Image 1: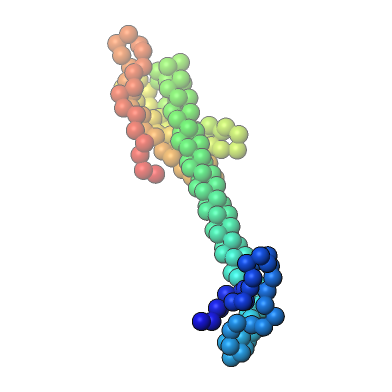
Image 2: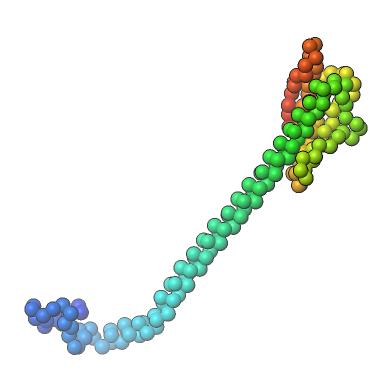
Length: 170
């Protein structure tokens, strides 16, 4: 019976396992086959390494792209929220002007409230002491626009009450 292990079949029990036979237990044609593929697979480790590096590069690039997209979306959401807050500030400014002067009305195109580099365009209608009053405020931050419409009325005791507060399409 032939032994195809690394140790020779005639190994003595007392010899250490590192003692190998000088002759190969495999037939010469099988050894030639193994040597052929061993010589042909010298670049196999490099190919495997390149595949792992390429995969890691693709995964890293995808993660960076997703992060950039999320940052841009967050920035756009923030600018939209700033435009809404600016429109809200315009409504509150108009309410304050109405409380101070019940006959307040904005000139024909309305008036502009500037906060930093951003603006709100406010229109108060109808003119004079007529109630209810409608306030339309349009906040603009960069290309983002938000528009609010508030309807309020003066009570018999002279106070101003908000009847409705809605965001409307621009």
